[in-house]
Length: 445
Ligand code: GLU
Image (tube, rainbow, N blue to C red; front, side, top):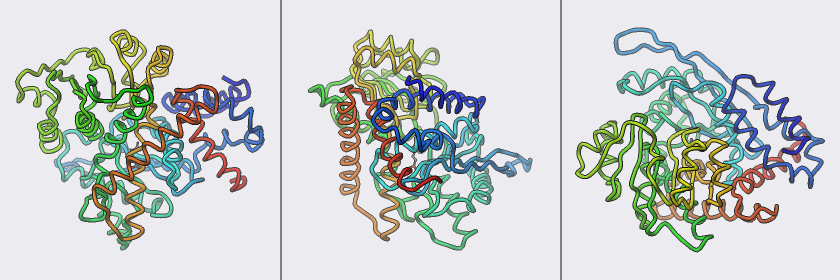
């Protein structure tokens, strides 16, 4: 890493102790940014990096609620409003027991660059809670969401901060959150949240967008090497919203997705995952992959080791951060891997990324490859602002244009900086330059 950037990095790490995931996200971006600072020394003078690493505002709050047995439960809520140079803070809410400030900050930091790459007018933010929705009734989830919004509402708004979903927050939770926001403010402010239901201000394609977008980005990478998804053997990790839609899209392009996973194990389905059955088990019944395996002939369910033990020519990690390490990456590379498209945020460890890049595997980092979700959120905001709703075809066409645009911008930036095919460098520099320009123009704030 560039020595000037190393000094800034050391200060950032020391100022934010105990936030391992945030440190990882910062270091990974800094490693790409030396050449931009050589060309633009004014960025150092204006302390753009130091400012970028310090969120504009961080909100941490108590979320009290009662469970079905009448017991009082206390969770912690977060919203980190990281950067508003390009637009209102934008990014999801994650409800998962692992959530703490370091996770929210890593996600918020990534979101700044991701949102910039989409070309849409959105800044970066993220939030969530250590609440675990698993095993909770609808009524418990509703009471939790209402309590969460009873504090959050004062910090958000169509022109201020626009949350959406992430792990543990889908259509059901966004519904409860929106209802409480509307009730407290007495405003039908559709643009305050995205990922809404289709009959009350949501956008078609938003549920599919992250998974579809990841596959579209990966298809563009494959095209750059004269190949495509057709005939590829694909492994997807996860079996939530992003994974399911990535599987559906990859198979529609002629690939066979032979495995996917949940936190208890993975299934191997050599005939190709049955997306209809997977949706039924996961989205309708809120069940587990074990139930999928029990209902389909010829499928094996494995509850030891990792889904990355299954060979693939294309890997789509769509579960969570740091799920794919250097050892798994080396094994995949040995067994003929061509490309990786990250549907999750930072699923590959730094070692894994190095293994992929050293082996010449096409590697699409999450902040570029999974930007289709937030990009379609911005399309939802656009529809809300114009009190309109678009067709599925039109919205999917816009998503495709945006993903192809992100791919091409990353590729062109990597070429411009003398590292053709380095999508990590292309995404980091491409996103950074856009935000840095806006911050310079807006003065010292
Ligand atoms: N949580 C998603 C992400 O990681 C989507 C955020 C949004 O739609 O605002 O980008």
